[in-house]
Length: 297
Image (cartoon, rainbow, N blue to C red; front, side, top):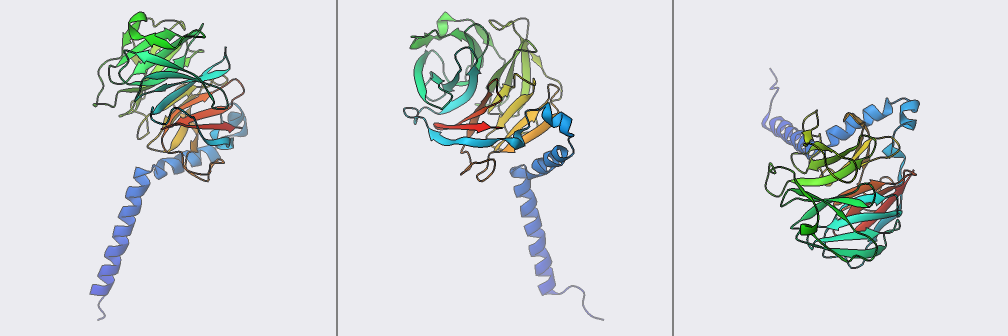
């Protein structure tokens, strides 16, 4: 009888098995399995639901990897839109600063943050109030920064403890203001999960609550925003190289990859740390160390 398995055939089968295992490992690491699942869900989404969503696949970059001079060594982190001034705010984690930007990514002013250890999240609330989260101290501070102010001292503003980080240096990374829900959302980097705190837009009320649904299906959470038009969440994962849109209940709706040659990007966004949207739905992204991106529908 002929031999079914020969040393040569065994080596071929072993090589094929190793290739398949390596491909599966890469797919899991890069979240290609999640991308496929989300893509299938997108294709099955009715046109009416797409019209009522942010719908990230329709966005294309019109400002791609624009450097922000003077921030090269500061490590930009998180981004938030201010509807009253039509500007953006970001925080610098390595050298604590609050930075105000134009909608074209121009630096308008840098505000020194005295007393902050590692600011990682920023959210514009109401009436000139801005929430800043510090990953190292696990504090949320609500500040005001009127025109002309160049320095803020943490001692001059109310502070709210966010609890102990589950992993060292993997604490609260992102924060966003949900005007419709009258709550401040904040999220831990890894494992990625969200909590909420009732707010009137100027202070926090009651106690924080962990949102139902458990950990997010992301490798990490580096930034987030709440779209004013739909109430949907936009979640940025630097490690997964994507932005995920979910409804208010946390159900995935659409996603946008941040890899090069997709959605108008020339190169992969190195490390996306923040996302913001304005009233028209224009989407802004910031990346370490000092790169600015803008996407339009």
